[in-house]
Image 1 (cartoon, rainbow, N blue to C red):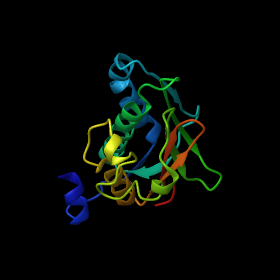
Image 2 (image 1 turned 135 degrees about the vertical axis):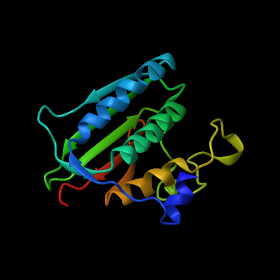
Image 3 (image 1 turned 180 degrees about the vertical axis):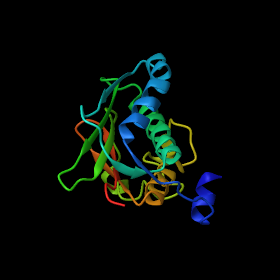
Length: 169
């Protein structure tokens, strides 16, 4: 439903200036017991100094819930059951939030399309994870609502999702 509201322009941003690390820490602390019950470690790295960005707190929370859920789904059964959550300020001043799992990553042929609705980073006939394929489309649209962006990168091993929040207004 949220994805539909975003697509129809019915969801407005409630942008505020502040430190997104506070929201990130809150979400990780809230989900940590669940993540650990699933057999994963979550490693959170935040800068020592306060950051300043323009963001919608509810949208950022929803992004993090979706991305952490994906990291649990796709990192399951891998040798390193860990999720890394980092937040830093780029040289250009933007705030970059990254979530990395240590799963198989996304097939290169699908890397550019995983942010489209109903696209999943798995082969249809061998799919083992439940879902609609709307999670990363919602993440992309929520980031855009905040005038930010999102990028997916394969790592060796794993997949990293980066959310870029603007520093300027």
